[in-house]
Length: 436
Ligand code: S3P
Image (cartoon, rainbow, N blue to C red; front, side, top):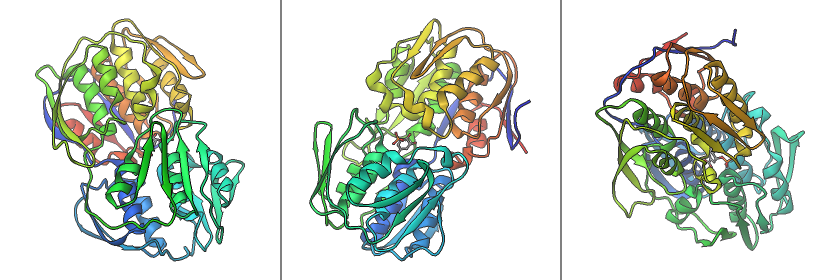
């Protein structure tokens, strides 16, 4: 018997049709709030993700004295104070949001006041030294709790730019260092081991910051001001991903996903699914938008197993749970390597997906940095999501190719990234029933 919390129950064998719009991008919504708070002037955000993760960022900014209004659904108006924040009177609660915690570490470590950042039990198990260590090299004074949250940022540090090579491909780490770099003297230059999402770089440029890119190195000079600009948040590719796979599995007449963010640092899943035989048509929107968007039309496809090129891993990092479902449904074997970062997400996504696949009779071999999945028959069963939103949604999609009902426990955190998932899924024919 798996542990409690609200559940999903999904009956098998549905077929999908119609069209939908997924909610706004989580990464971009976090950044729009933070950069709005740092900027001079008023930042109008539309398409904002009203998920719990981004609301944690919103509340933390309010606790730092930033005035924020909600003029309508998915709209936010941030009154920037030019980066002049007030000292928070209590610890800032980041909830489940790794992006919030890591970016706030960079943003707040150069302030005159001290702050304490806390998170929920899942976030409290995630590594923070990878951020604290380079920030200390810049002069910040930071305590983690045995490498984990809570994190204390001591005020009054004077930051110096650094030239730093990231030990892991992480956009959160890169972004934290760039934000600290804006408060540092001189140039901060970060070199990544592989390309990661570049929303910070794109949005800082839109806010008037000179961000330089040379190959895998990105740099900023300290002391630059941000100027408020309107931000249009596209649909979250990582949320669309569930329906891209679902469409490949069960959309006989096709499924249309509208206004999906298509930043090329995010869309590795499309390449992976297409390499497996997935029929996905891309109908591009405005090519000059700061963040490109497209409508995606996907139809039921015969999928074949592949070896995933390691260079695609960081371009699809959040999509692996649902990609593993595509692999389980494919003919033949799919091999993923170079993906150890999956072990430090909202759950250990390699171990938790392997456990769930085993419960449904899917043959696989788990490795330290990846997994080999053998496509074949998939039974119904019970899945423990370990409170991880993307695991829960991935196994809901799995019901399309399972022979029995799938029940998934502990799904409350779906609201961190995809509020309304069950209702939207039902609207295109995926019968996700929410149970208390
Ligand atoms: C994110 C970066 C990625 C991703 C996370 C959001 C971001 O994490 O998994 O969901 O908004 O910068 P890492 O930076 O740890 O790779």
